[in-house]
Image 1: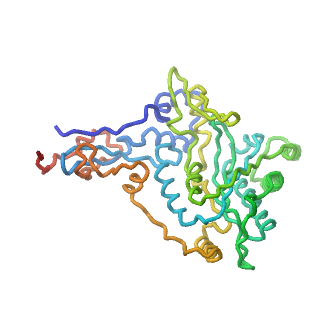
Image 2: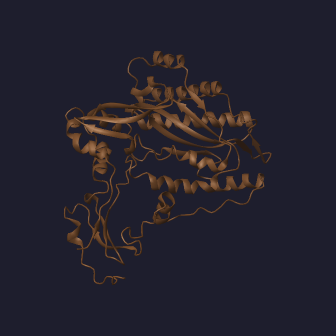
Image 3: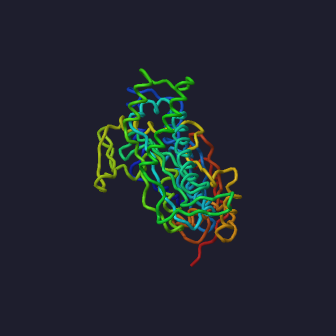
Amino acid sequence: MTPLIKTQKPPLEIADILRNHITDYLDTYPLSPQHYKIVFNLLNCRTAKLGGHLQRCEHCGTERIMYHSCRNRHCPKCQQIPRERWLEARKSEILPVTYFHLVFTLPHQLNPIILINKSLMFNILFKAVSETLTMFGENELGGKMGFVAVLHTWDQKLKAHFHLHCLVAGGAVCSKTKRWVPCKNNYLFNQEALSLVFRGKFIDRLTRAVHRGKLHVDGQYQPFKKSLYKHKWVVSVRPPIKQPQHVLEYLARYTHRVAIANSRITSLKDGRVSFRYKDRKNNTLMQTTISAVEFIRRFLLHTLPQGFVRIRHYGFLANRNRTDNLNFIRRLLKLPSQLPKMIHSLQHMMLKLTGIDITLCPCCMKGRMLPVSVIPRHSGKHPKSFIRPPNHLAPATG
């Protein structure tokens, strides 16, 4: 009998919580079309429902079923390869300068408005942050800065916490004088000044949206606006990253993340979910337990608007003239030309990430796993029904 390799699964996944408790969730909350698509994809990711293919070792005949991934950006199982490919594309854009990590956080007072106006409010957030950093770059350094901004919408307990992580190159390019102006003494900008300007720019755009009828605020807007000015808006400038080779490693912590990884879920029992979280105040790992319905509600809370771009590039890293800008800066810094972007295969990416050659047979460690049959989507049949017996297997050795 031909041996069949079974794919290993984590002990507990978000899909398990959805599978067991989505009906309980529906008893309390409606499921929007976008939420339905997310639930469907996560439930069927890497299962027969999405189809796949069967591989067979050319040497020993061992077979392996490979089901398709859902590729939904909210799925914790589908982000590793897109993240690595994105980071690979960024390698040629890293400059040998100090980088700074900044976090711009919106006050929780805005949460109810954001949750029902996500696309508009997120765009206002991106514009307020980009305008703030652009203005400081021009006023303080006399040139154009370059930075990447990544949207996060959660805290460690999956509650709403809207903020942008920005990775900023420590310097600016002045096109008039054709000079690169670096930041001095590992210092970028004053946090308090950034906070005041960020708050002003955000509220200004928010006010314009209200006046144009694009946004509705319950009650009188003016008292609400005054209350926003009373709060101190949190902007954090983290310690600088001095080694360029560590920049991509740092970026990898924040790009292509979902609200919670499967590895953080510790148990599902009696309709309650336990998961680990990091206590930022004490810098320790803790555990919390909530109902499965509340877990699903919090998870779906972080659904992004369809087609929304959550990773954006600004300044000399903006998409339109990025290559020309970087080549100009490299000439100013007397560096070699920009390296060409490499597009690697899935086999190469997995070998780099795990040290495992996914084409090598895990049974005999000699032959290669070759595709022999396609498993159609939604067929409902066992993969064996699509498999033809091998016409020829290599004779046993020894």
